[in-house]
Image 1 (tube, rainbow, N blue to C red):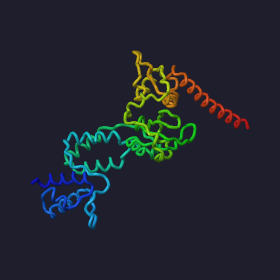
Image 2 (image 1 turned 30 degrees about the vertical axis):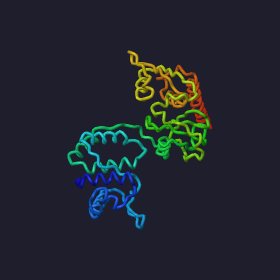
Image 3 (image 1 turned 60 degrees about the vertical axis):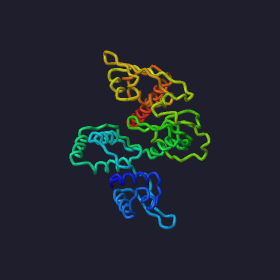
Image 4 (image 1 turned 90 degrees about the vertical axis):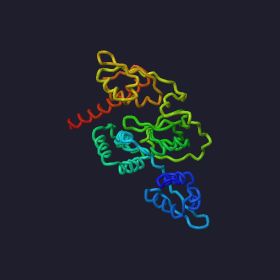
Length: 327
């Protein structure tokens, strides 16, 4: 006969697999009395296992909501590693499974011995992963991730520079860069793979017609830039001053194509998908004279256009101020 601790673990594994069960089934399986099984179930319930009973001929016990995992034993270093990972996520305004992360860590921390708690407290006070704080809301982040995992098409209302539009998309996944969340997906309206800023998704719901669903399981999120989306791949070439090098080194995507010269200046030479053009334009405008885009032509033209628009705005404001002065 197994000891009580082992029996509790095995009971938990059994009810996870069955979801619904009777006292008789457990007494027969574990060869113990009805009273013993009832005590075991009471103990599991006190530990937080969400059980409830159903009366009647077809009654029994049922596990509420999510399945419960059996106890998992960690070394002290493994426990510290989990809190190390949690620190890397702390400064994000929104995360998938945000509530679950918080409750899981609270449970984990609660049962640690005092010396392990002190060690983790010291770790958390000595390390910080800085992520730019963004005030933009991402209410549909978890839903987009769920759509990517379960592979179903969703209809979104998306707000871009050109206004709001409704689109049917099938998500590849989500990723974060510089504090923003992005969702690469296949857009059925444009018939191309596109990258959507998650904070710009205004509404989301499942699409009724799932017949055009594509097989996305072949793709991993890290591979999305290599998808054959029907767009011509562009060559990005940028000359950088020393200050430009320092600025671009801080961006993960740009630093991947960064070449630094002996004098501290450098250049960026890498391939880019067409969908990256708006982001590159904004970033390079922010670099000012520290970065000169040589290729592609479309990025140069859009930078010039944006600079002209900014110049005209300031010229108009200057004329208004001068007019007021002479009144």
